[in-house]
Length: 421
Ligand SMILES: [Cu+2]
Image (cartoon, rainbow, N blue to C red; front, side):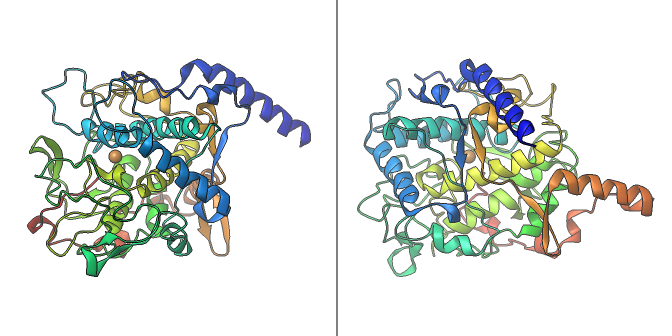
């Protein structure tokens, strides 16, 4: 056992060393975060509930410092934090203006790979401004106890105040302190708010967070993704589409210069959390986390996407790090396509997170009665059970099986907001 553990450490060391020259690079000067290469152990991304007061304060401090720091030189936005918001928005600018734009990083297979790279760039930027290795914590929103931790004044600050236009009025990112500079296009962001808006749970049909059961359903999907590799991909098959979360979408369109989804009636996992936190104000204007393009304006974005990345890692670890499509997918979404503006390919992100310099304090596990078991073991057990006991049971349950998916959003189409991703 002891030897095994040591051998494991050795292997991760070798992996780390071989990953040293494979850090995140982009067309803009890279975040000067070379520290990662010198770090022997991967940084640990912890559940927000497991953070010490000091760790919470440091995460907040890193964000505040980035908002004060100069951005990478070629970027025209005012500070390093806003560089990330602008960079996220550029991914969603409709094709035509940038021949090398690549994929959209949303609504398709590259959402999980591009955001993995995006979080790594952010983590390195945090490490630079803090002068030490930093890790993004994650928010397991299936755990009701986490809500109080996240929306506390010593962390992400309060939920928006309904009597003050749903502006965040307390904590480090409150109105008057945390200015929104990158506002997105008016077509998808009609509010154009100067401060953070969290109309939590105020969007019709989006009053509850995704359940643990919903996440377990995601873990049952048998392929990373499936043709036609987009918002209409089969939710019964595609892990990516299920986690991405657009239900009944008919396609995407260019709306005021930004890519947006058409036809979605409700959402799952990832999209639901965006809309639960951001919500919509009483006039239907999207809150900060609701507006897809500029959603990193709300620092909750990082906690949410770290958990999406944890779920991705969980599924990948149980499915041999499968990435699809290998070829034939939309621009930028194939395995060997670059994740513009990063130089790396989608496939380079479909690897154990330790090789990228971080790990999670735990992966998602399946709840079975009073115990929790790893997803890979559960899939194996399930397969064995199906083989032995009921041939017909090997069919995966459809999403209709769970009533929590039947939320409808009839008012969605009448409102100004869009399903974020
Ligand atoms: Cu995004």
